[in-house]
Image (cartoon, rainbow, N blue to C red; front, side):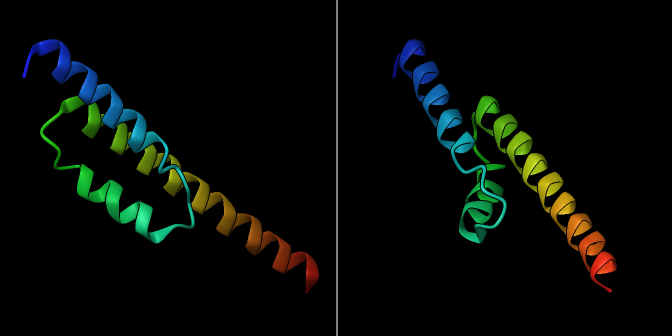
Length: 73
């Protein structure tokens, strides 16, 4: 495969990884975790970024839920 085709494939895969940016979808998170072993640096880097964003949103949602519980009590 040519260098140009490899680059286009890596960019396509990176974009696909970015599309898995859903905090409550366990299947998406599993796919992203598996993608951390992809041979393409670009794809792995995007998987790390998306997983970090998901974990940050999950933490924010937990914090908001705790605050709401305190208000209700």
